[in-house]
Length: 371
Ligand code: HEM
Figure 1 (cartoon, rainbow, N blue to C red):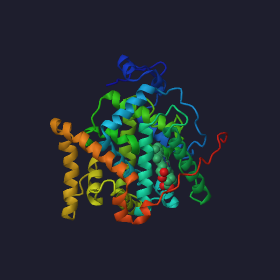
Figure 2 (tube, protein in one colour):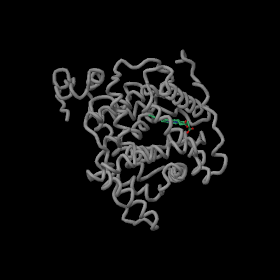
Figure 3 (cartoon, rainbow, N blue to C red):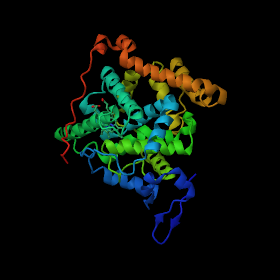
């Protein structure tokens, strides 16, 4: 574990030897942020809400990029594919509690009914898999093309929101809150979700998301994944407790409808998902107090128990995990592949339109030299 040493004279954080081993040179310079995690969160939320997603398209790798650490982040993801998928699904649900994000998703109308949600979230998973799989360093790689498309989608969404009267949307604040959805629970709920890895692996996934954030328009000073592992973890912890838990207890009006649509849309990939069961599991993982009301129907109770048993037992007990972790990982990867190549399950649910090819996204709306 890393310890903080503050030299009072200049208030700068001096990394000790353990930190130097854990956080190679490329990631150290930003560990010099003298602010406490509380101050960082306040600044992120206060200042970040007035700054749009960075419209400038990053061309080169940032100077702090560390190739080895980035590659290790990818490995960590693949060896925990199933548990990270669950963490991300919970993260996505959390993101829907934020009114300024929810209203953009409602406006673009690409995830407001189960079929479009199936397409939209399958695309999200496919983009994410390209980031975790292909070479970010090559300009014409699938990874680079994907981050460029996603950056373009965000720039377009920001413009459309502005034009349609929503005001400033896809802000740095909302980008960072969504970034949390992709990595926050991996750090905070590693034990509860039975994600297996070391401190180095966690730092690697943080570095991975710092880099992806950079490419999709998060400015360095707002990037949630900046600093030492403990600083990032503390910042995430505050975001979970001060932003997401209260929002989950009192979500916006459209939240429930959008969650039902999300889960119905994702069912072809994970058929056993049940809204009530997964929401109960989400609340448990996020540390919300038990409502005291048992799940209404037997099916939901079964699904909740299976979900909980998977993380508490199958992925936790050594010998069971030895068998079930790769099994669940491959099963989930296979399911994504099947839904991309041969979406028969989705076709049963949504009809023949599932087989029609969706055109690729339009090119990036921002020309390279645009600010
Ligand atoms: C780290 C932050 C974020 C990541 C990693 C991310 C990831 C993605 C990905 C992978 C897609 C492609 C999905 C597709 O092809 O349909 C996408 C699309 C989109 N994202 Fe994000 N996103 C982030 C933040 C945000 C925020 C803060 C907003 C809104 C406030 C937003 C709104 C959208 C919209 C509107 C689309 C186009 C599809 C649609 O209309 O739903 N994203 N995002």
